[in-house]
Length: 210
Image (cartoon, rainbow, N blue to C red; front, side, top):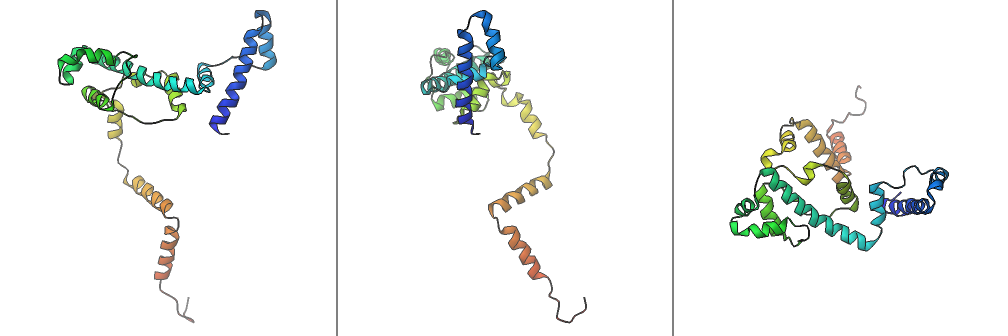
């Protein structure tokens, strides 16, 4: 079933059941839960998905997530480095920018330009990923607690990157993957190659011994 159709129909049904449960007197709530087969009323993730059915809520959620995440990350990364706000300003090339750093760490600011974010990423030596994503990715980010997401390590401290660099080289696996990609891009290429090989084989003359 398509995810968007599933989420709209499924969460709407759960939300309706939840509202019915909450309207009942305390003594009859457990009975109603048993009759409907509902043990847990609504998980935090399901509650969020139900709220996201409203377009205005979706817009506010995206905006709030972007501004809050940047502000919290800037503060967390600065604290992890043991820096003051003036130290970040100095990394940007001007200690007088300290008041701006204070604004950047305020979730209510929300006026970051791409160039400013790139400069801040360079100051902390972390990557910057600015891209459009499905709501499922945003919900997953919001509902999963991962310190590395809030406070990403700098390039030199990125242990996962180091492990990726230390992975053994597998030329055969790489060549196989390239061959597979090539065959997918050219559906008839393998067939044509086999036909060419058959044509290159020496032809047996009529009456010749097998």
